[in-house]
Length: 301
View 1 (cartoon, rainbow, N blue to C red):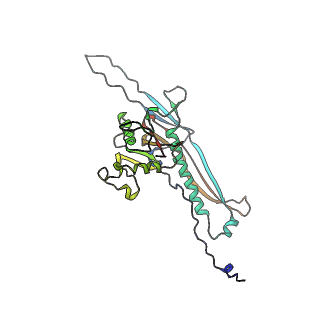
View 2: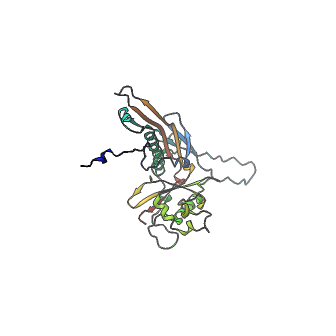
View 3: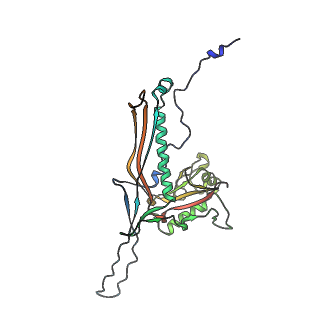
């Protein structure tokens, strides 16, 4: 019997291939970043003053206006992720998995940064309406949610992301003066929203934009003056995904300890395996309910 095939040469890759995943943190560029050095961090807020009073006579008494201060609180959370590389495994493998595992570990942290930002945008924030008052919870504004069946004209009908919904989001923010001069307006959307927009001629027609999104597969920042950032971490409820529109001033992100990674030998373990360790401490809060727009989109359409 001819068994020569058992002697065939075998070749193995010298690289460890990492599974498809979000590697970089995408949403840190969309928030106000600050540092903290204590158990909590307060963002102080000042409400607008009432209109000035017209002078109607001579030597009138002053009518003082008290500034209306409030604050939002950030409580940092501690996160870590340890893993091992067994020395015995390293000796028996054709590759050293340490570098690839460290990259995957950092990618996990980057996704968590984005997840906590999204959770802060749609969740409950805490703060004090006035000094000396009890801590209060603040929910997202119902009036800042664009319904899944919103249309600019005609009868309401469920839809995925549309240009009309984006225009409505900008109108809501502009009408309440929530976008500072020169401030970037961020759109956080997912791949389903993206495909829906790419079916709209207002997005793809060169008469509406200088770019060619159907050539590159990219939504450009010059459309409606918005910066488009894709995230597959957006909250989903049934068929509906919640896309977000907000300026950088809407959400506060505080570092207590920025991400740090270590690679060390564990001398307390047999054969001294390599320990890969990542840790970071940060907190996120929504600073202004008025500045965050939620757009409900039916992903089946």
